[in-house]
Structure formats: structure tokens, C-alpha cells
Image (tube, rainbow, N blue to C red; front, side, top):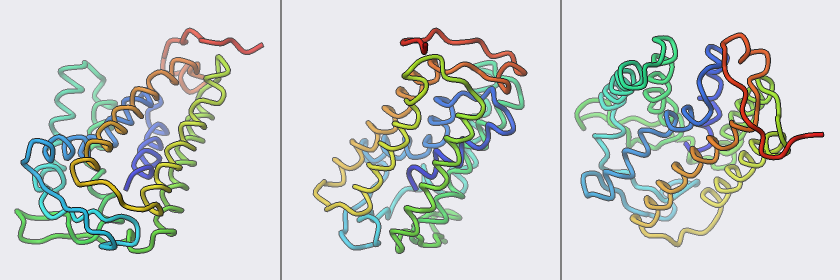
Length: 235
């Protein structure tokens, strides 16, 4: 799952609007960021096998440290400790951030083939929605639209960038998913992981810049968030 992770995770702002969009973007893809790094240093492995699913050619045959069920729980605990004791977040916000990190495995379970380790490599799981490319794309797109819609309702644009930025970002993310699902496969495994890592970081940085162009709105005012400085003021 790609854009669906972002969309589903943004819905957590219903519970705590203080969770910043950029932080949610990092939490939503933390396990994939770890996966990219571990593949690049040779601790986890994948192959590109065109046609292995209808959506992509990823043969994710060894990723126990980033995408096993025990790993998801461990990364959640690490995130909780980092948020609470490193970044001094409130307990509620830290717990929600950690929940987003660990929930990545559950969301992946829906779309992956049987490549997600359940227990020590003995059992693997995956419901295989990637074998139905259009259905998988529509599900992820719906989640993203839902999540972005919530952000737009909870905040107010302070500039032209703030008015249109997050929607444009969402369209760009959906466009990338179209290329991944329905475009030709031309990249090696290492190139695929490198571009994926770049994308995860870029999306988070762009989200960080865009959130400075929206005020907190009524939901944020209740939680005491500060107003940003607009880049281009609306008339």
C-alpha cells in the first residue's frame, strides 16, 4: 500500500488534531522507510518479478526486520518512546503516533501477497488485493481523499499555497501510484527502493512546508496550535 497509508493515517486527526500532517506522513511510512534502508545496506531483500501481482512486480521475499508482525509491534514501541521522551509529546499524541506506525502492517495485510511474516518466518500472510489493481487503486485513492478532506475541514488556508497545496500534493501522489500500478516496469530492485525512499522523505518535507500555510481552524484553536506565517496571502 502507498497512498492508502497516508489517507488512513490522516483520519487519526479526528481523535487528536494536534498531530501534524508531516508527522503523520513520517509515521505512516516509517516501516517502509526502515525497509528501504535495510534493503540498501543488504539486511533485507527483494526481487523485481514482472507480473507477480497485477499491481507491481515486487517479490518481497525477505523483510523480517521491517515488515513482520513482531517488528511492527517493536517499531511502535520505539516510536512511542521517541515521541514521549525524545520529543516530549503528550501521552495521547505519542500513543496515536505509535499506533500509526504499527498499523502500517495491518494496512499492508490487505494488499500484499503472502509475504508478511507473522511469526519468525514460519508463517506469512497477505490478502492479495494487489492482484486486483483497479480495486486496490480505488480503495487507496478513496482513503487519501477522505484523509485530505478531513485536514481541509480542520484547518483554514492562509495563502494560495495553503488553499491548493495539499490537494495538488494528493493528486501528485495518486499520479505516482498510477505509474506504479499501471506503468511499465523498468527499474532494478535497488533503483526501486532508492526512489521509494526519496519519495517518502519528499512527501513528508512537502507536507511540512504546506502545513505552515494553513491555520489551525476551529479544531486547532481548541488544542492551542499556533498560526503559521503565510507565503502568499489570500485577498
